[in-house]
Length: 123
Image (tube, rainbow, N blue to C red; front, side):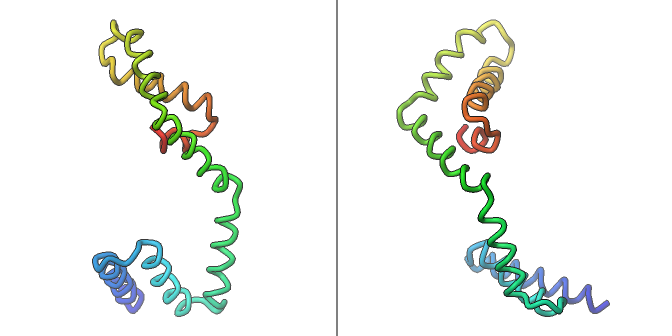
């Protein structure tokens, strides 16, 4: 029963921190740090630093800002708008023209960029 009380206290603390305007990452990290200090024998700082480093040094995370930058370039130069204007006449006869134009546009962008996460972020 003690674990249930601690879980409720952790959730209340987390919601309080989030409601008071603390950044999401800092609130989660603070509650996780306290929980790890209470329930594990390994030092919580060591475990958190190892996890943060291995997560932030992945190749996919390194490339994602460049794909987002590419999407920003496409947006600022109006190339994405021209893409959708060019695809719209091809979809005239299909019901749900806007839906199909969006799907084909996303397909083209995913084929060019090679990343579904970048396509999601850009479009």
